[in-house]
Image (cartoon, rainbow, N blue to C red; front, side, top):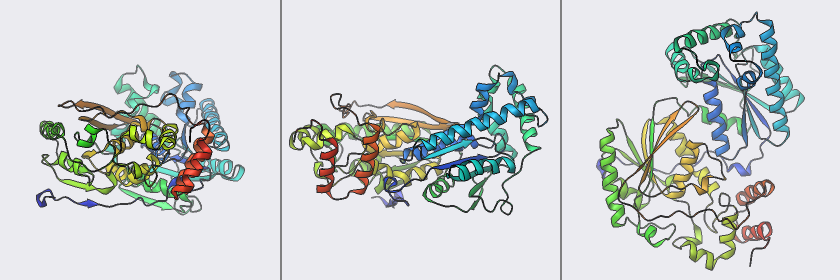
Length: 478
């Protein structure tokens, strides 16, 4: 490891227990803030993060309810005047409808619901608490976004609100002027969460998109995770490049796991990758690799600071390390069938599952949220988990993402999503993709919930195998 690289070894572990071992009490996250303060951006990011780590989460956006109830004309600034009693009645009804739907969803088995609205008055927030906590017994946690910096507000208006359905087919200058009037109407009635008057509430206040935080009465696992995440995300322009290591001798042989070096084609890819990044002319680029030989070799020609993360190591295949999929099918037919049945939760004997890998990668995601320009060089399963996070894919899709060797993914986070561009670099490498097995029926929702618990709580291989046999024994040969 070269001293000139200023390389650092990362051995970070997640700060939280495996989520499947935690009993999740139904919880409502209530957004608070004036328009153009990034509430919806945070609500969507938060919901996606919680879903990614295995907490069933859904956003209820009151604006969407309003747009279904009224015409575009009725979404102008006049509709939000405090003295417009007719509009106020419609807005209150939409807010109530969204809140009731949220309650029904949590009652039906949902774990976390995000209530996305301005919720700008103390009386409104009191009503929400009474409905959610007093009537239904749900935990309620408030997230308020406060912005004093006019540049942040202006940027939010231009980046997000001009693409809103409220201003479809509207001149840009007219849309900006109208939206600023809407903000003024809310400002005249706005009551911020006060750390004295509202000291009995559980909340976090975020000032100027992360410049400062105020946290009060955090109670329980979900609220801790919410605070942890919100204090790590930063709305900064960034580009994340993601690629697998160059082709290895193991790839050529069809073997999984191991720590073999690059093939001749893999070495050529490493040279091509360095040239590709030079042409990009990125400022402040950092390169992250795993501790495995192939990722470090792939990064060797790149003239940027390098960091080596143990958390980026490939999924541990346990007793199947160094075997081909055909070897596994012949030697361990039950294991092979169980993995085909539920690839996300299946844990290799003595190894890991994709669910385990997601938990291991959580510190990497947190650090990526704080960075600007980063290239991550990793192995296939790790690349799937990271790409699924940014593309907002669920656990059913994640293990089957096709991420070819010698392909670079350019990820640019934008409002409410992520722009994904791909670059196929030479030379052509072996195809390592294993498609979904069509002759094995997928799990039912009940089985998936049971599987999540069993694969996380049972650490003994023999016991785990017995559990698998019970759960998946329908028609599978012994």
